[in-house]
Amino acid sequence: MNPVIFNKLERLKEEVGYLSGHKNDFLETIKTSLETKKIVERSVYLCAEITLDIADLIIIKKGYPKPATYSETIYKLGDYGIIPKEFAYHIVYLAGLRNFLAHDYQKNTIPELEQFLKRGLGDMKQFLKEIKKGVS
Image: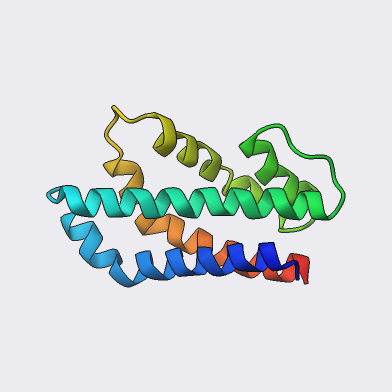
């Protein structure tokens, strides 16, 4: 496996592990603790950003045309058979989540963060499994 992709996968595993290990505490305090909100916001952003980086690198490494948008990058993983198409189309929300966390500073991010903690962590774990199958 490409060492850059490997390192990014390891970093994603680290973030997913951290969020998973503290999930219950974070869900309990995210609405009342600015510190928790900031920690979760950054970690969720990193999960989305790293996932998109991995997708982009794999597509380029395989010689496919570079997608123009983050959403297209995720779609193409499925279209090219790197991960199951249905799963790719399911996790395309990560592109929007990344953009939301990066650009919508004035908006309340807590509902999206809670959603990610409840459901997105499972998607990240599945992504890690699918990528390992798709690039090995």
